Length: 569
Ligand SMILES: [Zn+2]
Image (cartoon, rainbow, N blue to C red; front, side, top):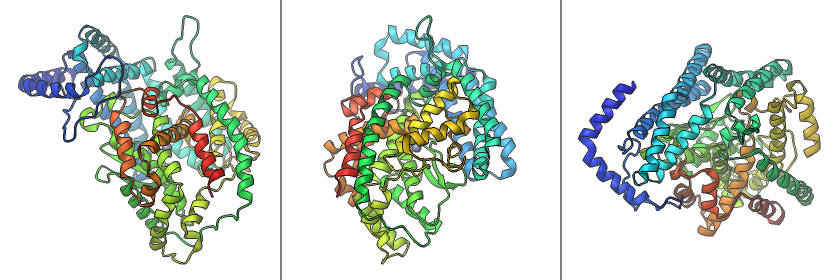
């Protein structure tokens, strides 16, 4: 839609709908209005139907125009999400090249819609209005404008040609990764990764902020911020140093305790993949995933998270028929992402920046809460075991008993494989990758030296030497799709999930009973009220502090791990 037509249509809406909308706006304001400081939101009363804030006429015409511009950017992003899901699950091979150019083109167009002088001027004028007429701006509008500005600043310096190149390489990288991993082919991987690192260093340099006249932040900081709003590299480093110290102490204790117990019985026989997917879909339904607005699919590529609240397609790796636990773990993980995405304020803020999720760390916290915290409890396996026995027709199989499934899922064993790592050693994988990607982006580590640095790190952190590139630096897809700065989100998300769980336990005292009964509704409602429906109303650190009452801390995670791996019978 051209901006002229957009303005005309806004005028028309103003004409016929002014009275209705202003009544609605007053109602919303009554609910949402609060003092200038960010205070916890009052929830709307039961039955209250919020107005569509995206289209609500605002007293600032510049902000109104921004809302329409960001709606269109959001629409393009939703189209890209759909194209990306199709790329992974349904696209015929012959469409590969043309799809790459479609995706690259749309990314560049989206970038051009966002990073231009007109948007900058509108933001400036809207801010002026905000200062002059503070009563016209409720908390949500404040937050929306703030997020618009952050998005704009993040992209404004980047070269559209680089953006298009990156988008193509991101999708090309999925295919390159699948091949080089399968063939243990470092010689093909190396130049591709070198290209990716150079490109991301260049892009990051355009996104760096200036702290003062002399000092500009490091490029890795800019990349980290893209995934974890507000995070600082030095703070993450401090947190990870503490966690490493604590886990290096905990791991031998857990292994020693575990050595005194018989190892769990391995699963045997066949677990047909269609039955696994039926189980996974059923579990997601029980957890509240809405299949009228989403689905669960298999792919031969690496799984991805994401989608939009209207179309949340979760994608997991094609099921391994020797065990149902691996695909179930992925389904629970992606389901945690999916339920969060579906709970975002889509009716009121669809496509607007304030209606989006809070970035990778909070996303991962929601996924890991379901996958690792709830999905690895004894009570969850008590719920699951009789159902899985029936589904896979393994009634007399002792390996299918709840206590055995629980032990299988929670067996701690240092290994080369991040994706299937246990809850304790998982951190060491993240520690290594965070360090290596930071050094590659800064130029301290050359890509050609990556395999050696990887193996040395694995030896130091876990006493493991990978036997091949595929078991070492080629195992993850992230760097092949340009996700430099994403890895820390897994550990930050794990820390957050334990902190959130800690708080939730005080409000819902019977979580174990609920899990045993397969009743996830109270937990989901709790999360929906405090996290999902708030979108980006608050920045991640502020929201977490509002929920848990304390800043980010590793203590709840350490308590959780000690309780599960040292104290449990
Ligand atoms: Zn995830």
